[in-house]
Image 1 (cartoon, rainbow, N blue to C red):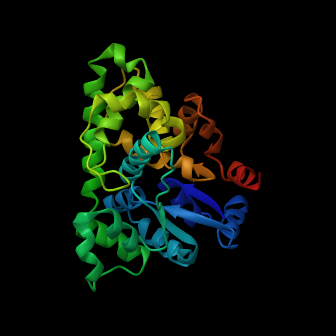
Image 2 (cartoon, rainbow, N blue to C red; image 1 turned 60 degrees about the vertical axis):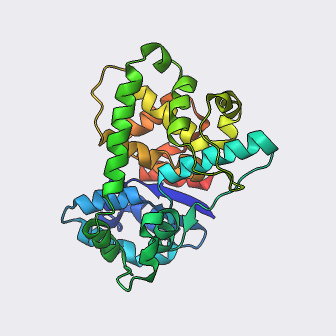
Length: 282
């Protein structure tokens, strides 16, 4: 099964241009049983902020529901990766965590303790349109906004330490600390200690691929003097899923920056449907 991730604008284009040549081929591909379209709370956040075209996009996505899976938010992925790095560093064992769910509600109420009570709520959405409405009405989208705002503040804070900012591994230290899990894979509670950092950095590429890529990606832009805003991180959230997808369709700027990271995952990015099809055919 190949995993396909499209950013929000690409999903809107897919819904709008389904009958056009390459978009039609992609639509067929997503329904062949060998591919799955992955969606995230970042999509819902952008849809919940709302434009009218979200209505027809949601109706189109409902036709794809059997072929859609929901991936856990990036900050939960990063916490699980750090947790896995701790486990690998201490035991040599690998920690595999569940990333994809068939239903949004199952995914979100599993990873977010705050909303676990909603498992028993009869208002559970049964369509993409209802999910977007739930996301907006119950203010679930605020979590995404809060993380984006916190990330912007973190970058500004790190920038004050200009020497540290020159090394992505040094920057990764800050990110590991911010994603430190409440408990390990085995249920132990380990308070953050700088003594662990060197060991975790040594297994970062193996155990924390998303956190490492996200760190490299935002340094490409934020290592400059450009202004950093919370909305800049929304694109970063989409892009951070790349280690767990076979291909990602994103805007041209993000694709360029992804390749500038020097990461092997940069080759999975494209802004064109034709190129996306080529990547998936490899």
